[in-house]
Image (cartoon, rainbow, N blue to C red):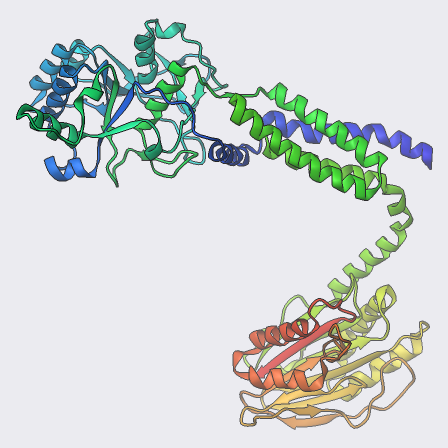
Length: 623
């Protein structure tokens, strides 16, 4: 046996390694990994922010004062003049100027005069981007010719969200008609650093995109100015007064101008917050480049190496130590993975996979634990097979649903105390619209009781079709079980037949618990018992048949002793009185809801005490 286990070890390990490593390399759980990345963004402190960057917001206050969006281009011309006059180093518009307008000449003139204005346009990008420079087929939104000729430079501002809709990455270069165009922030960074943007080394992922290193939440990062406040401050300064903005602060700053008003289209979700202005994407890109503070994702190989390392340690510890030690290890390993991933991101700007390694380590722990105890499982294999066979037999011999009838509304539920149970019930559709309902409980528990239950149900189904009254059916069932029984088992059973034409219930009982009857016009329960009837399968015997007229709205509750004998933690039984009380109190709910309430009452009474017997409940209401 030991040699067999040794031979099984190698293919087991190889299979486990394949199953574990392939999802990591293919990044199958990327959506969950992105969620862990967002968590890392939120736990790290604010990043370094270049003081040379200023944000001029066209926010709600601006739109309230000078008109709705889009603004007249004369306002942009005035802003350029003001910023230029006060020594702004660069003036960047995160706004698309693609269509001609009445004030274009003023804007073009101010742009030409300032000599340091940058504009944006957008490409029609392909769905998938590969290679360091992406090939594009067309321009989605172009820049006005007059602005293009007189500005300092222009770059594209396409924002490509990830699959979950959040923006975490940006495309930096694109080739259109054999010419390479930079992203707006990359273009500005090149001029700011005094170098060709093509010479700036920025880490890219497999889709030619750079991870955006968001410095902080929008309201907590960089210096913000209101568009309207700058205009007002300039107007006041002409008259010798002081405004809300010290325009001297503008000197030598890279000024980004863009829309941030509530409800506008330029607000996107990012890892740090759900509503983040698109202008912030370009601001953070510029900040990362000029501060040389980039984020990098670990390669697939690096992630595989980390995973293999933890996998090997997991296998060694799980196979060589006791269960308590290995369980302590798995908790420690997951904690260490989280600390490692968080530390690398916070202190080194490196994004290593976290979600799948944690899942994989846990799965490996379970797999090696299973392998370690496979010998013990083999010893129990025969018992498990018996239980599985018994469970399938039991399920196949019980009805899958209640019969659909215009005469009765029926709900049934069985809760086994173990994998297999000894309770049984069945529904029989008879001639003239009659409906038979049977419930029973086999003595004993486990596989023998479950098999005996299957036998009883099988014989009952045959006899109920040939013996059309409850007395004969129960009598013949008892004879068959008593004649063939060699296991010293027996079954208590109640069989009822309801005749919807006469609204009469006939029933016979073989030592089973009394049926609860709750009449529509009464506020108490009756207990229905047959005068004669011993448990079935012990010996030949006679059985009695009772007749009872029913009325519309009458309710019948059938149950097994798992209900009344359910124990609380103190050892007290649920009992008959609690059952009838629950039925009376909730009689208006209908069979399905009434059954659920009774079931809940039983389990609420038992609380955390283990269920020691099967619980079966059938509730019927006369329509």
